[in-house]
Length: 140
Ligand code: SF4
Ligand code: SF4
Image (cartoon, rainbow, N blue to C red; front, side):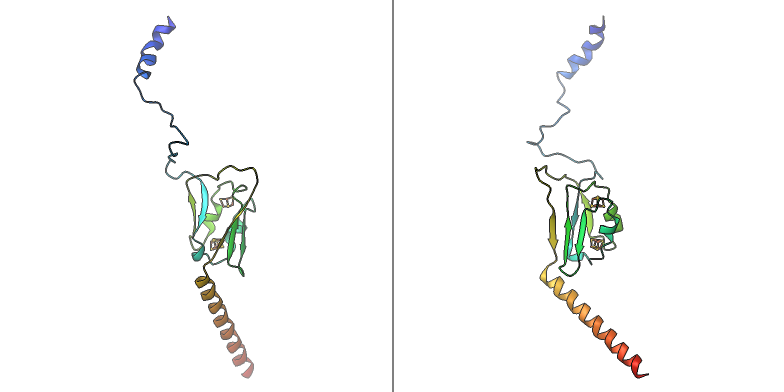
């Protein structure tokens, strides 16, 4: 009588809450350390390009002169290599996945004007220093 064997389990389930959730009405709860999508603190980025070189999918592109960092989230496999490689620790893996869409698209982050101006000033100072050192070496 197999039915008698399963009857207690079936009856107890009548009084238990469902194990499933009413997603998307109730937001998903992601387990700790779950992989999701990459976010960047763009003003901390030094445009070194290590993340782009580490990415196995060619998902990231960095434009140092424009101060931009671009990711095509539809190509990202959430491996986390870019997060590990970033020397400034400005990349993080954040829970939550890319919203599905009919077309692939990328998102570009732009450094703030203050950070761009500070970087330009630093480059000018470095160039002036190098020129002065070169001139001093030529005199010797
Ligand atoms: S998580 Fe992996 S695939 Fe996604 S951008 Fe970073 S390196 Fe590329
Ligand atoms: S590795 Fe980090 S600092 Fe370098 S370009 Fe990528 S996000 Fe910016």
